Image 1 (cartoon, rainbow, N blue to C red):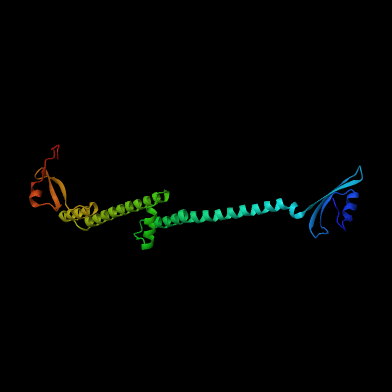
Image 2 (image 1 turned 90 degrees about the horizontal axis):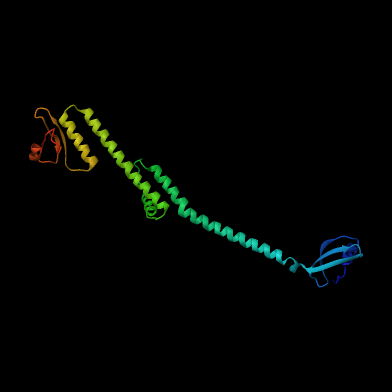
Length: 220
């Protein structure tokens, strides 16, 4: 290969038996990569030159490709995180807060209730979980109402010894608990040997007087 001016040092290094690489500026002002290796048996040396922009083109292309892949990976990661945050993390955080309020007699705020309604309309696992929590809240509230009614009934029983008053108050709580408009307590009347109405609400007097059940009646 042609050796530019001032490159005699490369020839001297080759003749001394050294192999290496060197970057120099040629007479045209272009950066060139020189690779040289000696041939000891013949006393010769081989010098190969190649412009650096071409010699390192593949490595630069690889470097740019790596940067593009990293940029795409980061962009996909950001998009995935935003989607995951909106579709799963935030809804689950809202459901955790909602579940912690169940049974504490605290109503949801307007915005919180709207968010809960939107989650309940979803047709994925988040929607199923939301509907399960709503059903659980209703069930818990129903049990709490039942316990409250039982506690009030117990309080009424302990507050009076008059059986008629106690029975009427029990009927009142039963109607609230079962959401009915008519109810009656039937008990055995030892004087008549029949089951008769001891307390009632919503029934006519004629029906109450006519209701008499034989103890041994299989259809009673």
